[in-house]
Length: 239
Image (tube, rainbow, N blue to C red):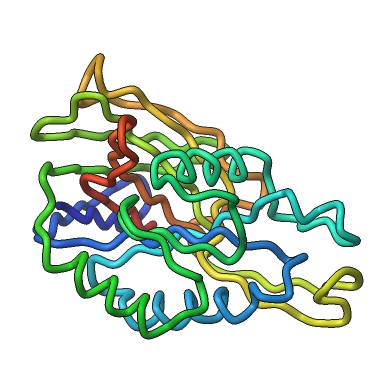
């Protein structure tokens, strides 16, 4: 696994690759309309801070099926709900719920159960990646140019690119969390998928969210087997 860190200085870009063995990708499904979700969101914030210099990655997807319960989550998307349903099929576990946490596409947990989640992270870190993903990017106004390279067997897999806002807070006025200020971490603002069956390396250009800025966002890419949902490797770009 490789983490590519980019430092922008004028028009120059400098990359540094750090080889890692095991990794843990934490995918949380959450909502501002769910009263059980704030503890899970806060746990993700603690884990993100604790593991910020290691190969543990956090993605928080705000689903939209709570939006009709009195409060519409500004970060929610039907795309993230659809992704959670895909995991329900992969894992053979329905119905879907919040807060649900999935590690490396293989195991799911209640997102607020800290002890079992930390044990799940340790177990994931003990298993080396089966492939190697390298990811780098450059940013100009309204454009993210990404370069990727996958080494190893990526058959039946896709490269998934998440554009992530590192943190935010919301003043919730209605619903189960009415009159609360909620803190969010590692919010997925965009999700893009690239089929790796055609080419395991290449370039792509994304139009970032309107509120994108290099200080408050990062890009996380991961290779996922589309047959069973397993995550094969992860890479992160820091601007």
